[in-house]
Image (cartoon, rainbow over all chains, first blue to last red; front, side, top):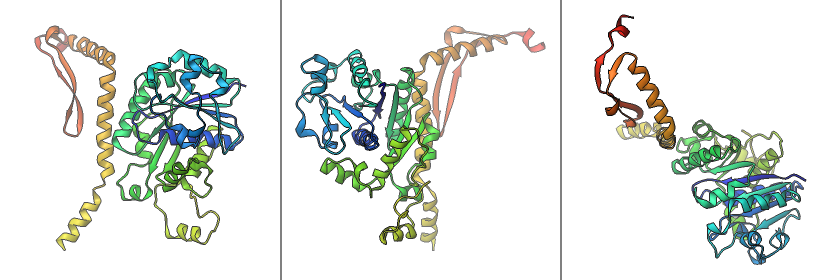
Length: 272
Length: 90
């Protein structure tokens, strides 16, 4: 097997990077793919709690690269899908504990066993970022429709280009259809005009995500949530399917709400 | 009535336009800051072009990207010592 390696990165913190990593990983696993997600945010681990696996951690990424355990001892199997595994970040060390060459070596071993290796990158553009991107074939950049997040995304896109990665895939998170309709939030078109990327997904600002993180079950498992649908579509696009983007730019009309209320199919998600 | 009109006009101002315009400038400034070698190469090209027509003081040349209101401008300060007449009559 020759797995594909993605790094999920953003520059700015607080845009929902671990959530995106967990949901993309779980979304691919739901499609029957063998997936491993790696948290490289050493000292500030997060991916374990988004996946609800925090109680199962014995060994971590630093243990693996330092040879304190076997690789498969640090791989934690997901509770909800048989095909998803996590390698957690170390919580008590710092970002210099892992080197880019060690990440490449780890990737080479994991490629034998997994179809997708998804690396969650820490915020910032320092050593942790360099470690996370060293092993990646492709990059997914997560942003929100805000000036500061887009500015940092642009910095990261420049660094990914300098590292000779292909044009990154963009996920725009926390879109609010009502604000876009009012003209108080940049939409898909505005953002794509500013950044040199290709669009991978549009994710709405959705209360279901907070509920999902509270429970430790990625929202992609929630068939009724809009953000879950967004991540299911992202997973299918990564697999090469041509799925329409969710329509997050016109607010929700009375009729779509009514259809949803009476439980009619097709009322939940409207395409762009 | 005036209040209603003012309210209607305020509604026209969409804050996303401000965000987009600010970002356009910010990103260009950031990208210029990162591409120092590009700036040096451009400076050399401009000096070469100007030198075909004028004798300039190479030591005193200043060139910079600056923000001027809502737009980005390339400001260059080149001290001219003499005009090359052959270039004018050409």
